[in-house]
Image (cartoon, rainbow, N blue to C red):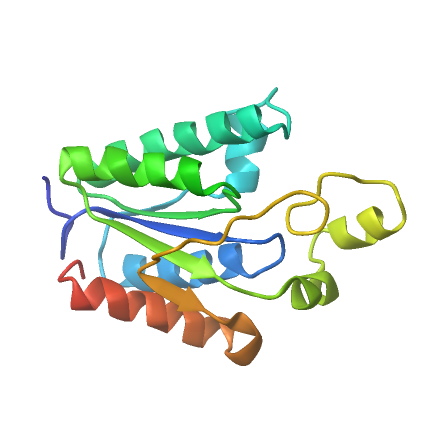
Length: 183
């Protein structure tokens, strides 16, 4: 495994409901890591879906394909010395487990973080207006509302973002990276 400027490559997988705070935490973490001289890529689920995986819908099969493709890109980056930070909903446990197995097979560190923000809090934040559209009947299949979200059974870290600032959440993820000697 190739090392970054100050550590080894790894994947930090942030999973949780829409508007849970995944992308905000990822950006704060990425900024800190870059400032320390690490090679970092943020693979934002929304950007990946729009540009790399355009054409996939939101069926279980398409969501699984989306997660597997993001997992592949992340594992390749991490295996090559990049700290890959991945804020994605990834609603199904079996899809996330397949990503974890891919990393284990290549000996690449994988840290799963459950951004465990309650759906009520996510609905109040409603960064993209998804919850409002769903409530108005203009959107169906919203993860955590009328589509399933299977919380991780054994994540490396659980963040209750309703009780901490994004900076505190980011610092908690950084602490796990430090504990494991990755930064």
